[in-house]
Image (cartoon, rainbow, N blue to C red; front, side):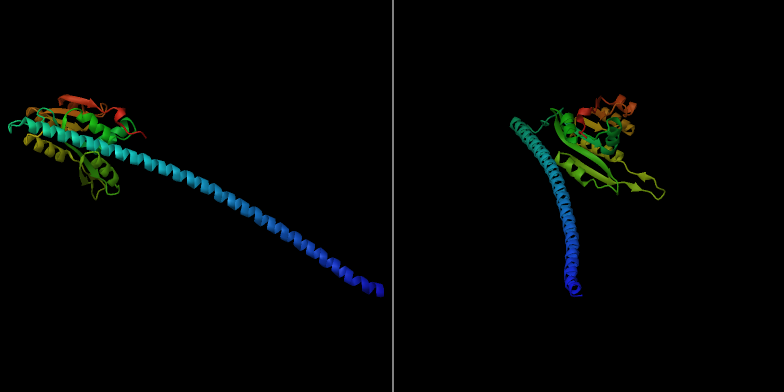
Length: 263
C-alpha cells in the first residue's frame, strides 16, 4: 500500500512532463509556422518594393525624356524667334515703306485637325507629329500664321494636346461639338477656316496658303484663292484626299510616315 502511494506522485509528475512536452511541441510548431509566414510576407514586400522601384525608375525616365523634348521644342522656338528678328532687322536696314517684307515667301498654314487626325489613323495607324509637320511645311519661307482648328468633344479633355500645339508655335482655335437631341452631332471648321484665309489674303498678308486637310469642301475656296493669284498647297494623304481638291490646287503634298509620331 505504501509503495502504491509513493508511486502516485511519480506518475503525476510524468504525466505533467508529457503534457508539457506536447504543449512545447505545439508551441514550437506554431512559432515555426509564424516565422515562415513572416519570412514569406517579407519576401512579398521585398518583391513589391523592387517592382515599385522599377516602375518609379521607368516613370522618371519618361519624365526625363519629356523634359528633353520640351527643352528641344523651346530651343527651336527661340531659334525661330531669333531668325525672325534678324529677318526684320534686315528688312528695316533696306528701308523704304513701299517694300513688302518677305514678298513671295509669306505662307499661312491652316490645319483641319479632326480631318487629318482620322486620316492619319486610317492611313498609318499613328498620330501626326505637329512639330515636324510645321518645320516641313514652312521650309525656307516666312511663316505668317499657323492655325490649328479643333472641334472639342464634351467628354474628351484635349487641354494637354492644345498646350502642346501652342508650345510648337501654332495658334489654336477651338469650338465645341454640338450634340443634338436625336443623337446626331454637328461640328466642323469649314467656314471658319475659309473666313480666316480670305481675311489674311485681303489684308495682303499671304502669298501662299497651305491647307492641311483631305476635305473636298475646300475646292471652292482654292478656286477663289487662285483667282486672286495666291498659290495654294493642299497637304494630306493621297488615298483619303478628295480628287477635285488635289486637282484644283497648285500643289499636292503627301503627308509621309516620317511626319508621324512613333507609337
